[in-house]
Picture 1 (cartoon, rainbow, N blue to C red):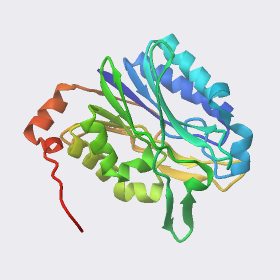
Picture 2 (cartoon, rainbow, N blue to C red; picture 1 turned 30 degrees about the vertical axis):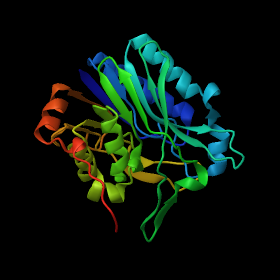
Picture 3 (spheres, rainbow, N blue to C red; picture 1 turned 120 degrees about the vertical axis):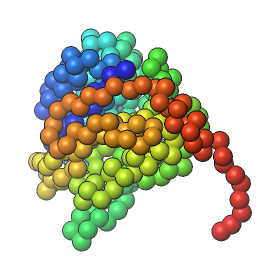
Picture 4 (cartoon, rainbow, N blue to C red; picture 1 turned 180 degrees about the vertical axis):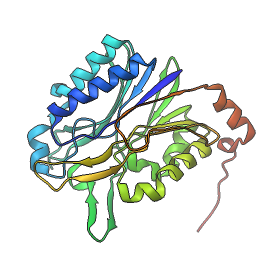
Length: 276
C-alpha cells in the first residue's frame, strides 16, 4: 500500500492553512496514496490562548475537519488528520489536541487525544507548557482498517515507549506519529526516537511533520524540525521529507511486520520484576 505524508508550514490562521492542506492531500492522492497523513496542528499553530479561543471550534462545528472529511470522501482515501486544536466543554477552558482517522466514506473511523503534554524547557530562551492550554487524553487507540491495524499517537508521545509497546501488543502494525517537533530537539532526537519505536514494536512508523518557521499574528512564532519520516519495522528509514513542504511517498509491505517480529519476538518476552 502506498502512503503519502503531507509536510506543512502552517500559520495561526486555520482558514488560510486549509487551502494549502487540501491541495497537498489532493497531490498525495493523485500520486497513488491510499492512506494520506497530515501533521500535528494541521489547522493552526499559535502560542496565544486568546487567539486560539478566537479561531478554534468545537469538533462538530470545525470547518477544517468538515472540509478534510469531505475531501477524503471525494478522493476515496483513508486520511489521518494528524491533529486539530479544538474547543472542549472543560470547565477550565482547555483545548483538545485531537487526531482523526477518516475513512474513504468521509466518516470518522477513530479519534485520539494526545496523552502526553509537551511541558519542557528546551533552551534558555525557549520553553513550552502545552498542558496550560490543552487537556491530556487518557485513552490509547488501535483501529482496524482494510490495510492493517493502526495505532494512533501524537508528537511528544514518542518519548514514552510503554504506549507504543501497548499499541503493538494490542495488534497495531502501523503507528502514526504526526508532529510539530521542536527544531532544537528535532536535530538531536527525532529520527532516533522514531527508529527506536519502530524497532521495539516491529511496526511501521509514519510521522508526518510540520516544518520551518510558523508566523503568528499574536506571538513571536516558532520553528519546527520537518523531516517527515517513514520507518520500517526493522528500523530502516524508507522516506525522509527533508525541510520543504510537500508530499513524501512510501510503499508499505505489511509482511515485513511479521518478519521483524519473528526475528526478534520481544513483544512476547515480558517478565514481571520487583524494584527498584
